[in-house]
Image (cartoon, rainbow, N blue to C red; front, side):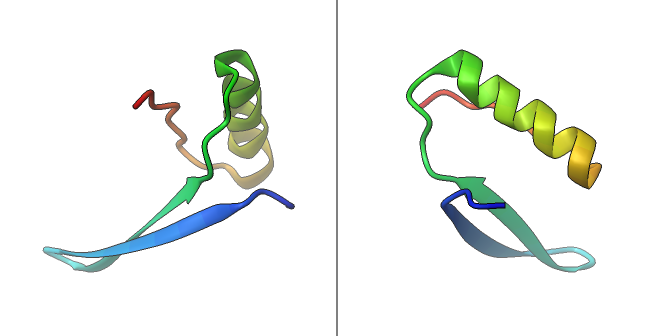
Length: 51
């Protein structure tokens, strides 16, 4: 979809877990809009985190 991302893996009780993180987005409203778009298009459960 054109977003810069990083994939992290870890071991869970049922096997590997994959977490896909997008590169930081400076504006919170834009980050929330991107999350909403991904929720709708890919049927994902997204979170917007602030570091």
